[in-house]
Each structure stands twice: as structure tokens, then as C-alpha cells.
Amino acid sequence: MQKNISSILLASGIFLSGAAWADNSIEGPIESMQAGTQSVVVQGMTIFATPSTDYDDGLKGFQDLKVGQRVEIEYVMRDGKRYAQEIELDN
Image 1 (cartoon, rainbow, N blue to C red):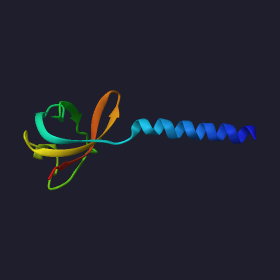
Image 2: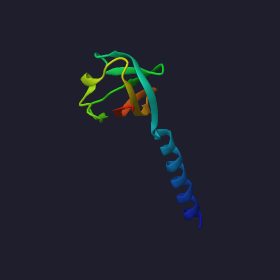
Image 3: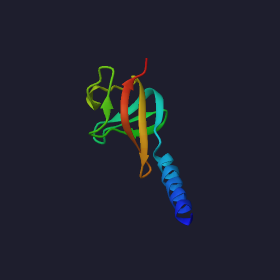
């Protein structure tokens, strides 16, 4: 019985810690961009693109983004920074 309780508590802890990695999203126009850091600012938040960032809606990469474009970005938080998982045009 004690082993079952320990297993349940461990599984609960793993599940709850996974919630910290939950996806977030933001929509709006790109306010500014930095090619050197591959980052954009949307709604005052800086979001970094990575080699694994997925681009949709005709976007092929960071170079296709422009200031003023309306985008939707799904991102994760790691080490206090936002990293884009997906960037697509916001219709």
C-alpha cells in the first residue's frame, strides 16, 4: 500500500511540473525585430525563434517576417525567455 501511495505522489508531481511547460500563445502585429538574435516583439513581449521553430501560412523562415505583420505565435518559457514553437500569419 505504501508503495502505491508513493507512486501516485510521484506521478502527480511529474504531472504538475509538466504544467510549467504548457504552451502559450500571443497574437498581434510585430512591433520590432532583431535579425541578430532572431527575435520579434509582439504586445511588448520578446519571443525568440529557434532552428526548430515551425513557420506556417506561407512563411518559410524568420527572414519572411516583417514589422507590422499580424502573427500568432505559440511559445514555451525556458530560463525566463520565450521561445517560438510556431509562427503563423494571423488572419
